[in-house]
Image (cartoon, rainbow, N blue to C red):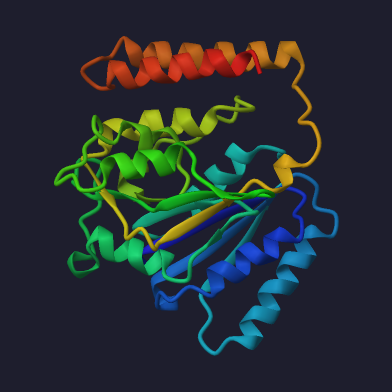
Length: 280
């Protein structure tokens, strides 16, 4: 198994089915990837609905990819992702949102960019597996737009070598990435955080990333933000934001005092971003 696609969902909406259709419609040979769906929080009828989708998909497709359904009652995205990591079997991991979609060639292009001809790799925390970044676009009600990952991708285009320094912007989010399972190893998402856990996770695995490669720009990951643009986003209580920000700053400070392991500039960028987010 080469790729484990980790799809987490909480109170799934109709867009989840579009995400699953996007994944089951991938051009990559089905035996090369698995889809792990993790429902977290209220079970209600959601678990049965997802199980029914999987059953219908298996009946309709001649050669469907493996889809596994997991459940945790904890209302934590981090807990859901950690559960999937502990149960995945792929050499690479991709984290997918339950509102997002991908171009049909996304997984195959990502795997080719990683070096499919050289697989299987020797899995160890010290190997030189590349992290592969796809082309990420934001889908909003007003149309498709760029984001920080799009701009980071374009800044790195044409470079013969992309390392943690030149590809720093690409490491601010796990979105649209093929991440070596060996790079993640024993590192997990912080379940104490309510926001910012994704950027912290990328910071913690950054010392193990040796190379970054860009997939074909036609390999598009659409980050669906349409639902987020409807209505006014409710601000979290001050005490919750204070606690979350304090925990993040403590973790980043711990990284900052280890300059031989973590890039001080990268960690400082995360500290500044954390402080900015606190006021929002």
